[in-house]
Image: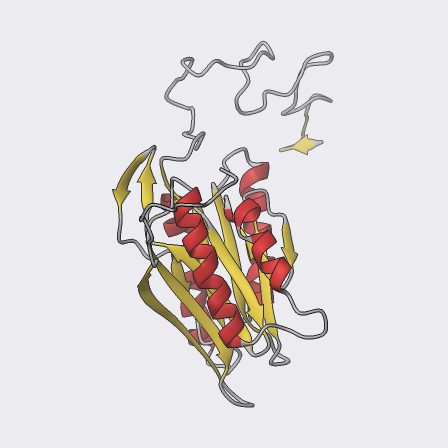
Length: 269
């Protein structure tokens, strides 16, 4: 390698022979730094979630998708913020629900909003679709995970694709994604998914009325069984309006129909 006519050493800008690269997070002797061993050149990494949202549940029906989440954002075990929407309308084709660290959800929403502004500036009559957003999210979250600075979020993305077909997917903090007729985050994976799969007709998709009733039942179960859920929730609805346009809205908040009377003659607890 030449630099101004001067031959550089073989190991130019690298470790000495027999030594290791000085990766971020490692001291010069190759040992991992301890948390308290910091200096002015160290960067700050997210190591834990602070204010968190719990479960998000998405269900696909014959003409669109429903995504529901409660409005509670917890600070540890404290029910700190009790009226926070975690369902977002991205555009007329996409809705998204976010679980995990709410600060990271706000961060990714700022990036998504900027992408929506860029799309509008192109003025090419091409709007982002849910599958494109889910794919972009996998790249962003995997990139952050690979740099050891992940966004602690678990999102449900739904909407109407370019063929006017419903699309529903889940993307987690490591950039892993999958699509199904029902997806969820948090405790809803254990409490709500079995309820939805049990009611799935074998030969057809859910109707809007059936999906809405399942959302109501699942949010009631989550409120009773998950300590980080509240009785208030919002629902995002994205459905085909006609052959050329779609309709996406966030509805609510709705209230769980609570029943706290004494359940006599109930067995099995």
